[in-house]
Length: 358
Image (cartoon, rainbow, N blue to C red; front, top):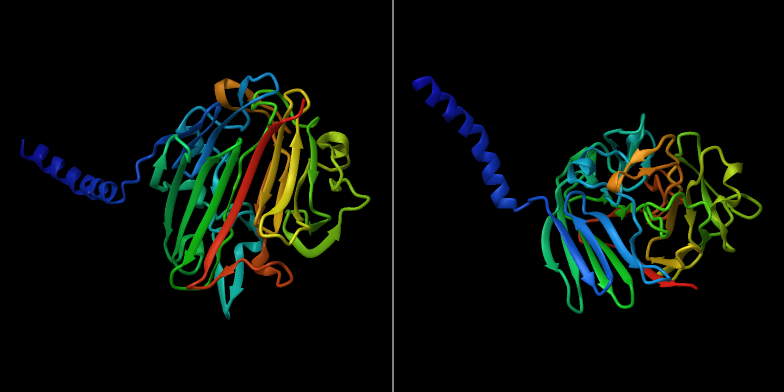
């Protein structure tokens, strides 16, 4: 009997701190729906992840236009970043290292020798705190926050980050990332990774989608997709989407598909990024953002994967338009800077507008 009591006491010693931490942070994983008529999205605070976006097609039929999973556990175990918020630095950092103000920082590599989307435990793999949630009404929104400690994944300084998802009229999804460097200069490049198939997540590939990208230059990359530092024009290459054309019209000229950063042409505060059109559904998605670049990715996986409702997502099942500061900016002085100093505020705004073209 005494040994049983001792064992129970030992268990409580381990469990009690976890219970206290959970009650202090209030970081329970949940799913939150924002709704405005027949336009709705669902968010989980695990990874500040978009798990569904429902919009009508030309026949008024509502469909889900982002890829994803059925359960939170699948998001936890997944490696594709479906719908996730990305940080402290989205995209790649070559060699998982950089030098800032005379100090060399070694980060946590998670893609060979390089870092991708913030490392093994980036912002996509943590539980965010729900600061505000308004489900419906005139201004449905949710704000999530995350505190990133000094040294997390090797990055210098503590950072307080937030993301707000909001539905606006007519059929507009606003996503606003904010962050503060609390005590040291540090790179911050927040973004997110919805996999869009505006024909419907279970409608097949996106090769017949018509796409326009408002960027006349790309950042050239090596075989590991790390920028070389060179910025090249897209003219007379398969990367030229300055005029709208089908995603698949030139994709066979590339080894796997598109996975490249475009330097956006506009210098406006909210820049035109891209427009996607799916003829069968009639849906159009127009993207604008405050970031200087956009990573265009065409789901170049080499085998099918199980998604929502058991549907098997094939290669090129979706496209991503991931707005951001250029990849590996910390190692290229000629790129827009991703460094945020204490006292400065980082803001990255994205606006998705859905419409119908009959």
